[in-house]
Amino acid sequence: MLEVKDLKVSYGAVQALDGISLTVNDGEIVSLIGANGAGKTTALRTITGLEKASAGSIVFDGQDLRKTDPSRIISLKLAHVPEGRHIFPEMTVEENLEMGAYADPAGMAGTMQNVYTRFPRLKERRRQLAGTLSGGEQQMLAVGRALMAKPKMILMDEPSMGLSPLLVQEIFDIIGEVNRQGITILLVEQNARMALSISDRAYVLETGRITIQGKAGDLLNDERVKRAYLGQ
Image (cartoon, rainbow, N blue to C red; front, side):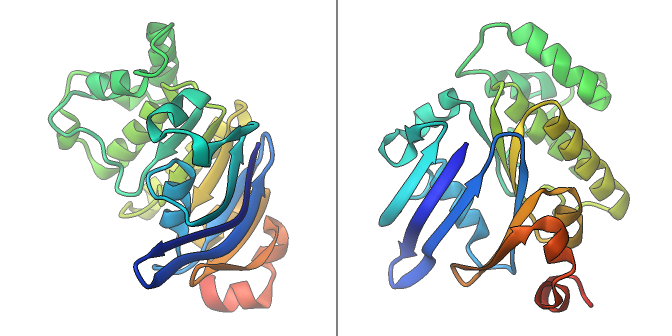
């Protein structure tokens, strides 16, 4: 579904991504793990056109994303849940969800009902300003807004950031449920253990390069990954 080849991105003299390649197959959860500054967020932002690559290719569902305007990428059914959530705090929960459907408003009421079924707390708070929600509720709203686009694939950037352990587990349960309902997921996450526990495959990104890749279960037992990311 997604194929990235030899992708390079630089910020001035800094090489943020140095020729990374990765694939995500239909129906998978694939994780991209690594330390702060490794280039994980840059990778997602480049896939969705928010950053410009200097070299390489990005093909999603047969479409060349490097030749596609960022405003059109969402219409290809590729959604992005950004780091920090980036909800609209002065808008209500329901207005935030409506924004998620701007590229494909047909059947919005039914799609919103599906989101409310998955996230009952959002339905309870649908008239509430999004900025007054708890961190966990804001993360649910960010995921719900992405689902309003009826995506084939969602890119999720650090969904557990800043959440309590109980809410982290809830968010990862939600990610698994979304995937089981047929949505492919590329997950960037610092909580490597949780990410690997729900993923099919994973890549380790270090200073702009992929250094380890394989089945998620194999990476959980890889001594290099254990030492660097699992605290063992």
